[in-house]
Image (cartoon, rainbow, N blue to C red; front, side, top):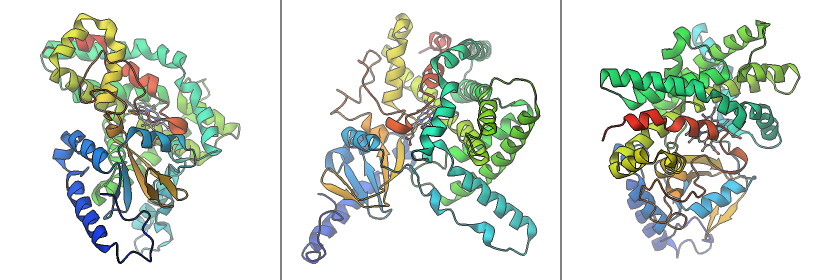
Length: 412
Ligand code: HEM
């Protein structure tokens, strides 16, 4: 049954009461299963996605007041619609800095917290045209195929070192010993972040921010992310100052943004905000796609053997790993106006979760979607988003994803 929010006139709302109660009960039963915070759901969300897609593909969550979309076609429609607002409540940040607390240390912290929160409004991912196009143009040169291909020997060398170490010790924790250090090194090299003694702290801060960018984030996680944002803001402010005072030509993304700022193409807040965004976004998903990809191969040993026997299948294998179990399962949007989609009306200002993890398993788009098949003919999956905000790190993520040496060393 569908949800009553749509197309029920006020005048007939009393007659519709039993229908509304039924819908709420059904809603509750579905929602007990759709729980992004439960470990069981997170381990395997796909059966719940299939049920949602079949029974209520444009699902309204009464208790949260948001929409959950699970059909490929609907998600694609909204991703193609440039009116859809990518801002997820960043406008509603409480202005704590106006409160005058008797303790000056707390006042100082509240001020820093407010400042770092404001920077989130400049993250490219939450900007709308024309600001978005300006930011994208500044960042694009760092992500061309030529730039990324030039990184390949560095990535290969790092990957080889890590795998050789694991072969010597006979043990490999894929995330801890391989994916995390490889990705952190790579994104830091691109940005120009000297990890040195700050590595452990920076990795933890990026993690604390990234896990808060999710659906149904618990309050404590959001609070931890606030603290991490304050610390990252201070770190990148200092780094920008250091890079500015360095007269040598630097070939890294932060220096490129500093030059854009000097030419008046980028504001100071845009510069600082996007250093933080790129550092955070360049770490989480790429690590997890390596983890998820390796896990899928280990769970399908016949596919792993096939890939080891025929390594030229690496390209379609990478695509299949990206489709089959993608790291970021949702993209969040807001309706800028009332939007009619399917047989529902999403009201202005309401939050919409585009469940790309479900879109990638939609049988209307992918035959036998639950089958892991490294020979699958490539089709547009939505792991990297689509349209205006489509991922800029696609090429990099695909390069990083599965190194041949790791694959050939994997033992069933
Ligand atoms: C497997 C790895 C990755 C995945 C699955 C991924 C996924 C995504 C997705 C889904 C979006 C769009 C989000 C939305 O529309 O709300 C996005 C945007 C973005 N990603 Fe990635 N990403 C990955 C790696 C990277 C890397 C390594 C970088 C490099 C720093 C990067 C940079 C960006 C940027 C700059 C945007 C914003 C683009 C814009 O707003 O125009 N991503 N990513």
